[in-house]
Length: 236
Image 1 (cartoon, helix red, strand yellow):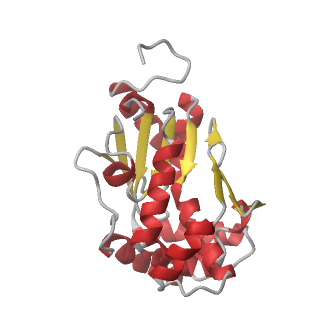
Image 2 (cartoon, rainbow, N blue to C red):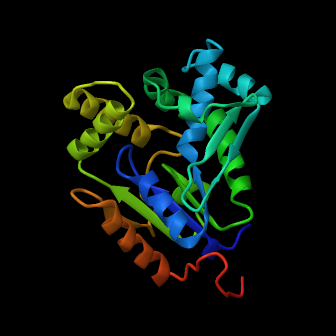
Image 3 (tube, rainbow, N blue to C red):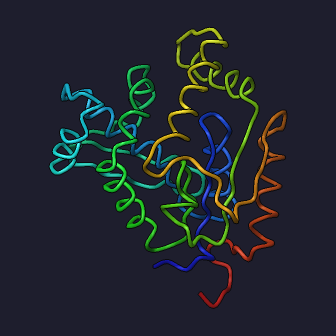
């Protein structure tokens, strides 16, 4: 098990700013960065490519036995990279089809058990910032720092709408908000590893705030809890 002082767990709903904050912390402390949501999206992409029904848990379990899934954590704020059967699919994980199916795929026990085991293995050497929806409660419950990121739904929708526009897609903000609301209900209501705030998590609300301001607050939290930048002197 990695030392708790070398792990930072970030959780929260879609669009709250988890990845932006996690990558900022990765750059500040010179830690590796793992976007666990990308792993669930990669499994979803593989499912869709194989014409598997996202509701079919047994078919997904069978697929995972032979799926060649490789994840390379980012370093110093760089994004994670994900490969499926040798193909770099990092840029294919946020299509509308994957967005629509990922919550269904990720609620299956076989999928969660497989990916949680992979995530814990990737964190084994420590010095990791990991973001997702069950990091502080399931994947890394022993992490020294757990942060739960929240944000107003309409602001989350505006951010997601801007991301879509940057990729050339257009969608009304209210429709985006409804999709996020539905995703929240699915994530919070699933039986296996639902989205929850860990009892010892620090809550950071990103509503109306600049990323640099949010990062400064999170760095202060990490420093107060004894997180050291990689390479700093310590007894670990």
